[in-house]
Amino acid sequence: MPSSEQPARPTPADLAAAQGRTIPDVLAPDLRVLFCGINPGLWSGATGHHFARPGNRFWPALFRSGFTPRLLRPDEQDELLGLGLGITNVAARTTAKADELTADELRDGGRALVERVARNRPRVLAVLGIGAYRTAFGRPRTAVGRQPDSLGDTEVWVLPNPSGLNAHYTLDALAAEFRALRESVESA
Image (tube, rainbow, N blue to C red; front, side, top):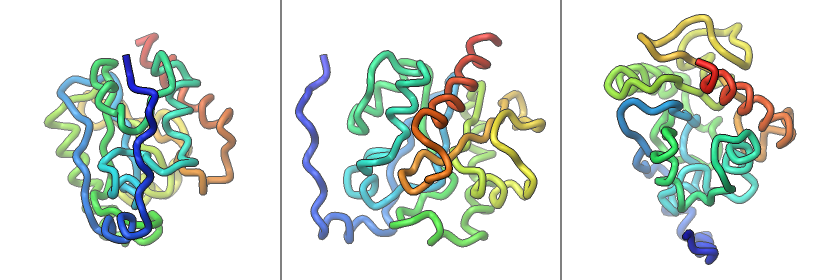
């Protein structure tokens, strides 16, 4: 049974020291869905856990969409593997905001992501951030949802960025997009 104790919050010094760090992927071969963030934020860099910043809606959207049986905390990210889910990023470098990344970093990250997908063969790659996907893959007219192109046998979806800074999507709307992906995966 998971601990109900919340992990310690990073201090301002911890967050400052996290700039430019990388964190390990939550990854295994043949996952159902590999979720791909833009890049780790400072909270993630400080804690070593994906989507760790309070206010990030990844974990609530994952739960509300039915991907997880309960609301997981970022420090429980390894439990995703048992559910056939994983996490990676387009760009590995930790920043305070994704807009600190250059277009070249995103394009390089897109190429590395294609290699990661080829090696690990997830059924679906779900990129969480339409702008990052457009830049990384040179697809300026991409819309949210299933993409017409795949990466080998891996289906590609683009979902909204779950960052609390993305005011275009409420948590309910975000969960609905995640649910559409889950229902597609389960019906395949």
